[in-house]
Length: 480
Image (cartoon, rainbow, N blue to C red; front, side, top):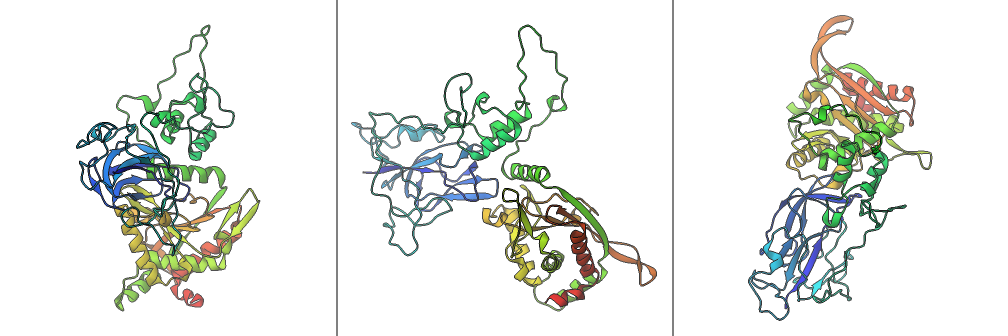
């Protein structure tokens, strides 16, 4: 007899606590194989296809496309052991039907308790080299926080005569009435609690839009936009004066939710401005010789060398001289942590917004290797295939905003890094070269740095070294 297994949204790593359903890849009644992708979700880091660890018939899905779910929330249920769509479990005392009542709705909110054995398996991480279960039950593959290794011996059975209790949601410290009634605040995400704390939002005053009234990040963000952070209760004795009409309430105004990649960018940039005392210095440099060197490299044959790769190679050489800028600040310990490896992030504009892929161990790579990795990560960013691991862990960021046709900018540091180098467009300009006025290829370089890790002398020295290498690429030979 088939078993109905519940598959929950797994931990997708990097501290992510929620994900938005972008596209369902299966429908109720479909037969799925083990490790077949069943849903495409978007986290604050990347788009991820989530594979199901069970093979069988899909009996229910939870959540419409566009719904945001917390980690651990049910995604779908699968009748394992049923090889055909008609072989789903039937209620006790009734013959088997082609489809259960719970499966008729592709977005059922709560499944009916089936008479067949319903098993919820906890996440299990397979041990390398250990013997796994049969291929017909599980696969051994993982994303980050869930595994499909051997099931535990003890199973939790749900009996139809005994309704499942409502999920217990931990209450926030000092939690009191919920919307005027006694009870815990339905929030499970630490990110949501922190966001509410930072903006002064009273979670007890919110009505959650998630399943069973769960308060999601979008609920807190909406409360912030509507001014719920500082509620002003009106009294019966004093009539409330009419508030002026804000621009956001004008007829025809369009509201765009800050979630997914856009929301992650907003959170990170706001945190950077809030926590990092940054400063910016800039310099114009003659890039004529650098452009000529790149032309000569590419004319020699082999893989084409990108300008971004040459600038990255210059950055890694400069960071070797000024390691203060390849660091982070631990204010809890009141320490500056200098990092031994350079994981170089670079800003890339995609249809989904700004992303910052990271080139691991950039300090060990040649210009050719850097070119190949930049091309791979850029293509993955455009197609939405970047993994969370490829979008995190950077120690220094290179931002080539010159591709937008602008000369200069004051970059915002990619928290928790300590610096970012911005590069403007390279254009012909009048320049004094060898004592005479000439038309040269000029670029503006700007460095934004965390003033806690160094003073202006260090930042200026770094920027000057970068400019000197741009003007005289032969200086890099000293570091090879």
